[in-house]
Length: 189
Figure (cartoon, rainbow, N blue to C red):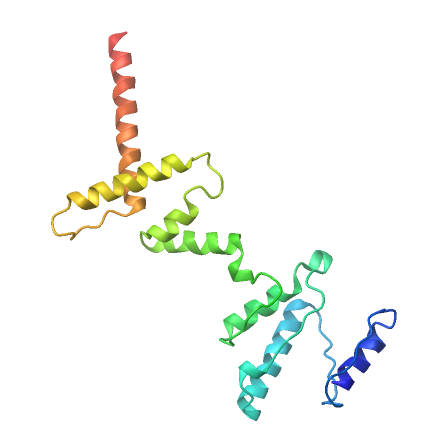
């Protein structure tokens, strides 16, 4: 709207971009004074919820635009907003950047949390070598083949051997053979 372009020009007068509004004046622009990115996120989501609940504006017709994604020691400003939206159940989609929850570290953390609760083949495969543990694809393939072989041996498929279970069983076999070798070597001396 014309009002948004007008405020943009006032805030960034040195901009060389020629902005042309495609709509009429639009609503007046509201300025928020925020203490930090967390306060900013809270105020933005408060406003979104107010428009949704009181004015019946669907979330699908709302947008929050960020120009600056990184602000020095403050980190990525939009992460606080993503967390606030998620915590309050407000649907959102990140365009033009990677969502906090789609980043590798966040996905790995979620996989570790899933494994802490129960055996989970998808989560185990994700974090098998993350962080790097010098485990090759051949090691993973051996664990996978062992699990498949164990599952084929089971009667009626009542007991599923997970990848994590297979890794533990293989580690036990390797540990047992190492102990036996050590014992044999010690005994022969």
